[in-house]
Image (cartoon, rainbow, N blue to C red; front, side, top):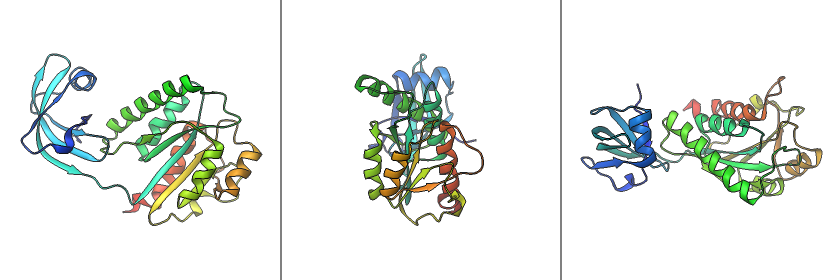
Length: 247
């Protein structure tokens, strides 16, 4: 069984034999929620690729424990990274999308405001929304034992995403009526792949035309039309099956 993962921002300089403290929310999560025990193996990560393996040396109360480090390593950045521009969704569907995208291994998630999004983020809601997405991503990263966590960007509009198409090695826009099935794509050997996910009502014709002109390739997943919370996950999984999951 893999060791549970906890976030610790100061492990970059840790050495074997060091004792690090988990306190506050992370300590409470370890002690009260995960119920770690003395001598249990745990991993500490900084979310940027560093992982410290160790064992619980001491538990103090309900929100603090000490971890004795046995090994520290840094996981390299992926040769092929995945960025998902995820349209805003109503209710908890957007957080479900972020959760699934984090579990499947994406490297960055961009909240996308489109014409047909039911949800609208003004400046105040954008700050709260980004914090919710970061919390959802962090919980999923712990669950999937990730040392390198996705970057959650500030929300953008469709024009900003179209500008991003020129900066990546492959840009895909999910479109149920597209002639190109995702299974026919050949992934680049390295670089960055951008996957653009529209809202439940789909992208408008104008938005789709703007993205296509910018270089994004309209791509369909299959005969079924997936929810906005599932489409990005399915697309990235299909892409990974032809790239990172093959190595």
